[in-house]
Image (spheres, rainbow, N blue to C red):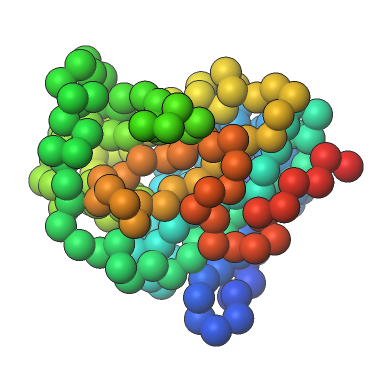
Length: 197
């Protein structure tokens, strides 16, 4: 399997858009979800691709999908977010970490309208403030476990209503991948819109 990403810079140095291909063909959203669940090579490639981004810190955003639109080509944006490069705050998720037996924990946000997938502390706290730090500093097995749980969570969540998959982090300085019912924290305007057709 040969993976690559075509990229285009977003105007004003604010980020980069990625179009993912496997064996020279666009990778579908469904294939990406399945690869997160079961393909360590894909997850390592994705972590490496993100780690090479030219931003110290970034937000990761994907287009919304529902069960009927998973055949669309998978793409994502990284939005340059230097404000995320600050000390991590593990105490804000401590109650979830204490209950977790695994390197990744999944829980609902306070408003109960989003599912959060977060790594538990396994290395130095500097590895967990945001996704860029995580893919650059966290242990490889924990990176794989994060992507696997994201794939599992997306599989469980997909249905008739759209889901927005992203990271934000302005409120809590600890990586948490969000599966949202709405694009609450999205910065990339084209992904805020839901188009089922």
